[in-house]
Image (cartoon, helix red, strand yellow):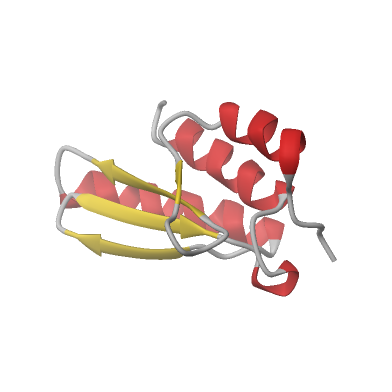
Length: 97
């Protein structure tokens, strides 16, 4: 099982995922991606889903037209882990950030 990130390790990890912020009241990070249209948003979700499946780590997300809201937390660990940060980096790369 992955270990929760705390202290300096957490700060360092979060500095490597621009655009992501900590969620109030949860040990999680979140980001809203906005695309040109629904097709781009759905394409992003499809590519991100393939990465998430390979990692066996699945996001909480929702899509409304061209917007995709994502929350990442490792439920088995009870909070934010390096796995979440890896998926956040991958999502940024997929989105071209």
